[in-house]
Length: 245
Image (tube, one colour):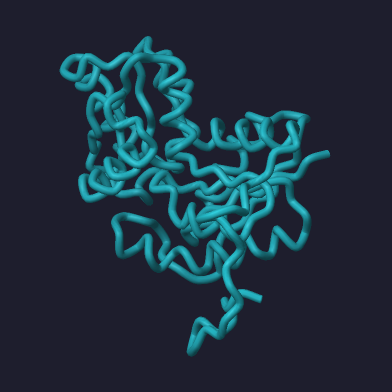
């Protein structure tokens, strides 16, 4: 059976478990999901600074699972944290949940709006949409103004605020689908889709399904050009253990 690694780039265990559950449901009996999170880094990723400090620990987890022979990796952060670096050290496919969700939405609808957590995340998501060639398919990137970790709190108003933002997107954006912009929203898509009568897409399930399909096809990450293996060289100080070998 294929084994697929889902890595949560932040250090919050409950988010890792939520992502693993969504991924396993998506792939069913086709693959076994193995989930992990870094031993070091921020408890949530809310902006460029958090993102930078989450990458080394995440890459260390990917390197470990590569040694265990997994078929591919899912990066369970909607910013697609460290995606390009991860593809440089992985053999099988590596897919970020943001890229996966955007592509899935583009296959289901002419336009989509993204509902993320905080406004500070919007620039990063727009940058990714442009890089993936999907910025013209995105009607708007919206923020529900809920901290990431509030999605893990029972009784939090976060879900209600996300629902309200979806209703606004339907009224104001002329969108045909909604993309949920955080791994912490992975358990909300089906409920919100029924509630608002619109396709609501979350990236964990999409990314796990895509990795599984690519692995079943025997496809691997290219090692020509940008995703070539890192050149061996010394790394100094605290990063000595991350030196390419």
